Structures are given as structure tokens and as C-alpha cells.
Picture (cartoon, rainbow, N blue to C red):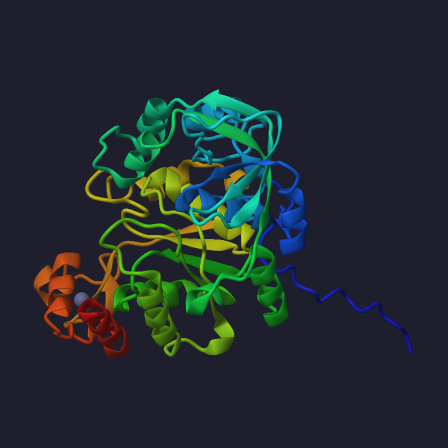
Length: 389
Ligand SMILES: [Zn+2]
């Protein structure tokens, strides 16, 4: 009998990390304590900077290995590229408050209670052009914009250099879901998924977003439901409540087709530029496709509804390395008797079950369930309970 060489049936799993290599700069607790001992100066970082540090160390921000210096900051702000030409849309900087002296060498990065988060090898201290950053990255210098407020409120000096971080498991039901890119990649491989679509959200998932995820999932192997749980703005639903609501939504997906994980990173509300960042981060988590909705990562009326989709579509596919899936808002249509969007339903608005965010919040606050065509009862009940707490 002729022996034939068994063809390799191993499907490639997921995407290549941005820049080609998944960065890993995680330290064990003891290693971290060692690196920060011996008279090393300390810097207390903000919660947003702490979340960025974790994202840097776990490779969520690959190919970045640390906080940016002057040259990288300018290049990213002005051209959305790192100095070597790699696509990167938003600066990742570490503020250096007045009065904090930094010598060459190492800086221990600590949270507000003094806990050690990681260490930075000081490469450079520079004056951060925060106005240019606000104008070019966020498209506005309006301090009412929550992302701009964070940039303009940062110290004028920034300290740059490669980092290492103690990526300890986080507490609670959210922490248990805070997987690293290496962990989601391993989970995808174990499930045999070759193509994976990522869904970013900072809000509870209602029927409209469930529909978008299902439309996308119809064409790929798996779905990464990947809510951002880092610092968000006032008025956003707390991460613990959202996580319970996402768990409830999982009941409407086959368990072997969906993975729920939490992304610890700050929300910047930078609209189009942040949509690129969100896509690149999901690429690092192993996704091959990424859902981009209407006004993705926007806030207020600073960005047009399709600005983010258009910016992503303008980028060379090989620079992005993950396929954006562009969606319009979804709704339930009474005439269609189904979920739909403007692309798939010809009927007038009066046939659509659509509620504004304000309407939903006021219904939930008064203990009223939104229509089931808008929100799953399990989800709405969790939100009502939370709004009464
Ligand atoms: Zn219709």
C-alpha cells in the first residue's frame, strides 16, 4: 500500500500579533519585589496608567514594550505610526508630576495604596505636547470631552521607557475574566477556532448588539465578547454589573462558539483613532475580525457616525492585519418580525423598536422592563437591580 504523507490539517489559529511578536513583560510577585528593591524611586500612577501598564506587559499593546518617548509621541500623534512605520493610533504615555525627581535607572510604579504594579527602566523624560495630542488624536481640545480632559489634565512632563509589570490575577467576577492575550490565544487553539471575531463594548449588551455579534459569528468560527473594564467615564454602568449582564447574554450563544473575557484598559473615547487601537488590541488577543459599529468609541457628538468605519477602511489591509466588520445600528422591526438594520429592512422608523440610551436609563431607573425586542429580561432585571442599589 502506498503511503501518502498526511497533509497538515492544522489550521492556523487566529491572527499574528501586531508587529509579529506577542510582547510578554510580566513579572512574578517576588521578581517584581526584587526589581523594585534597593532604594529604587517610586512613582504613583493613575488607574488609567495602571491599566495601560498591564496592557503593555501582557502584550495587549504589542509591539509596544513600554511608555512612549518624545519621538514616538510625535510620530503617533502626527502620522498614526510608530517611528518604524508600524501603524499605531494613540500615544501611551506615563505622566510625571511636578516635584517628582527621576534619575537614570529604575522607577517602581505603584498604585494609590502603594502596591507595586511594575517597574520602568527610565529612558527619557520629555515635555508632552498635550494640546497637539488632543487636537490631532481626539480632534478637539474641548475639556468637556472625557478623553481630552484626561490628556490635558496629565502632567506636562512624561517619563518613558520599557516596563515590566506584576500581572497578578484580579479579584472578583471581573478579575476572573481578565484573560491575557496568551490565554485567549490558547483558548482559541484549544477550541480549534481559525477565525475569530472580537466585539468591544463598554455598555450592557442589548438585543441590537447581540444581533451584530450573531451576524458576524455566522461567518467565522468563534466570538470573543471582550468588554473593556478599565477606567471609564462617570455614568457608565459599573463593570461588575455589566459582567453579570454579559454572562446572561451567553445563554443565547452555543458555549463552544463564544468566549467572554475582560479587557483591562482605559477607555479614551477617541472615536476613529480609538477604533484602530481597539482593532489592534483584539488582533493581539488573536482575533481575525473585529466589529465596528456606529460612532465606535465616540462620545457626545464629536465624531460622525461612520468616521471610525471610514478611517479603518482607508488603511492598507496589511498594516491593520485584522478585518474590520462594519455595522450600522440594529433594531427589531415589527413588519419584518426580526432584528434588522437599515441595510436589511425597508420599513419606516415607526415599525422599529428603538429606544435612546436616555429612555432606557429612565425606564430602568423606574423599575420598568424595556420591551423584550429591545432587551433580554435577564439583562434588564440585572440593570434595574443595580440602578436601585
Ligand atoms: Zn422591517
